[in-house]
Length: 265
Image (cartoon, rainbow, N blue to C red):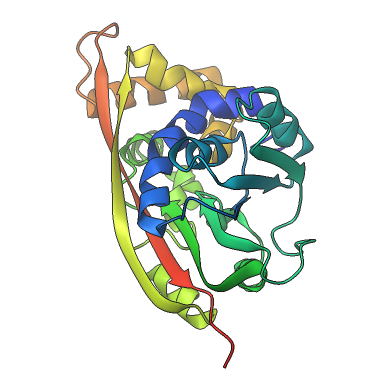
C-alpha cells in the first residue's frame, strides 16, 4: 500500500500543516503577482491554493505523480480559472525552458528519488532570475508532532529507530542550501519557517496517525493493537496530556531554501 495513497486521509494527517506553512514559503520565495508559477509535488493542493490567495494575478499549475491527489485537488479548487492540476514527474517536466516565473515545492523534495535531477528540471523551466524555492520539515528536531511520535515509538519498540523520519534526507539545517548551490542556483539563501498547529483534542492529534499515511502511519498500520495502545499512552505522557478533550498546541519548523535561476552569460 502506498504510504501516501489516500488524499483525504493525507489531508487530515499532514495537509492541514501544509496549509499553515504555505504562506511562509510564498513570502520567503518573493513570488511576484504576475505570470506562471509551478507547484512541484502539489499533493492535495495546499500550496497552489495559498499562492492563488496571496497573488491574485498569478496562474498556478500544480503537478503531482499521484492521480488520486490530482483528482482530489481538482475537486476542491476554488479558483479553476487561475489554478490547475495535472499528473507529472518532477524529474521529467513536460514544459519548455523558462516557462515559469517561479517554481516552488512544499514538504516534497526529500521524497523525490533523484532530487538533483528534479532540481535541474525546476531550474530549466524557470525564467532567468526567477526563484526556485522549497521547504522540508525539520524531522530531526523541530517538527514536534512527528518528533514526539518517533521518540515514543522507539521507547516502546527500539526497532522503530531505523524507521524514524529523522533519518530522512534534506531535513537538517544547511542541507537544502547545499543542494541548491550544487544545483547551480544563484543568490542561494535559507531560513527556518515556524508555525503553530492547534488541535481541538488529543483525538484530533492522534486519530490521523491511524489512517496509514506517511512513515508514521505505515508504522502504526503494521503494529499490533497492544503496541499501538502502548504507543498512544507514551505519546500522551510526552505531551503532558491530562484531559483528552482539552485543546493542544504544537510548534513545527521547516527548513526553506531559495535561489535564482542563472541568467544567460
